[in-house]
Image (cartoon, rainbow, N blue to C red; front, side, top):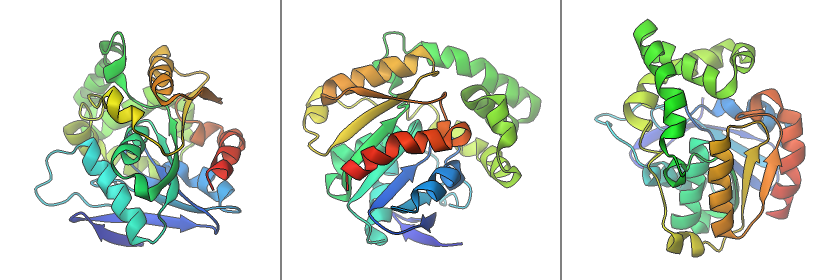
Length: 265
């Protein structure tokens, strides 16, 4: 299993295909396997990079690592692309991964050709920031009570992506994702949601960026996407399905994003 040392931690990564480089950044539970099918489909035209974010799955938790930040996550992504000699790359981030991709645009523009920001968790900009938490918190609490972080992680993904999506995932991937519950709830959750770049930083982005949101997602994802798109001066692109079309609508998602990735090449 390939891994590389960056920023004081080891990052597991996978490479597929040839052509212009594209980095996929996963959301909650942080596993490269979130994008397996999408990466396979795009490998005919692109060099696709997927990776386990630090402290998740096959990227071990660094010694003494008790907190993270969006800049730390972005620094990892930038260092990975640089170490693999694949910068500048197009970047697709989903959910928490979209927050990381946005910070890459702001702080590491040299490693990014352009970014697709999908289902971004910019909950700090919502008119009612507690709306998403009100949906998630009872589910996580029930999972914790029933079986601790692993069970809570499963419950969280089921509510975020749907029962059918969870049940269809490869069993090994499901196991890795559930095992990341301690990182998700103990280190990540709450940190990403509080991220809010100011308007001046957003106005300073010169790298091409596109904001995407799924048709069936809750209203708060549409609100966050509209807020960001207005500040980047772009239109929101609709993607099929709900929060994780990379799992239940991968072919349709690829048909949507392939021309956008080509435009960034």
